[in-house]
Length: 262
Image (spheres, rainbow, N blue to C red):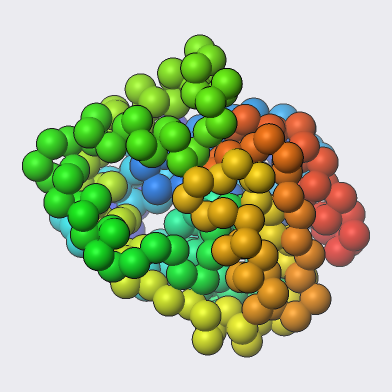
């Protein structure tokens, strides 16, 4: 499995599609891993270079001691892109991945030509909310958060399906330190003023049933970016690449074509 070793961190990634294609980089949600894109990747134009990675503390990437700062997560994405020579990329981020997308676009606009912000916001929740979740995972483990998290992530029918149960199990199998570290990064992030300075092409997507970043919150964040587009996927939850991959792929593909990336 491809990995990149930095002095302080090992990151796991997948590099798919066409090696010489226009790059698209994917960053996943808190408490998940790069597999949230499994159903989506095959539905996108394969002439693209499709790079996805596990955030620090998640999946097969290394788990540094928490807490993590959002700046460190942004730097991880930046270092990965530099190491793989990814320039003029479209960055697709879900939830915390979408916060990373906003941050790297502000910091390294030379790397990013457009954004797809999936079920995310400039600020998500409150510091107190995230501290409560950190305390809970430290005291009782990830299983104690599994059911409320799945309720925020997926509509009832999907939660009850075999695939919904698989994602519940994957959440529980995650690393508690990685979750706590990422939660701390979200708790300390407010990108309202910096995201409002962005002017690059942006597509904001949200599931109508998202219980973590509801449509109005995502719409508000999209409104900060001049000329952004906002789309609701009916019947989808917080991670539409899992429960509505065809609809998500269609929106992303149309956006990529509209900006000349495909």
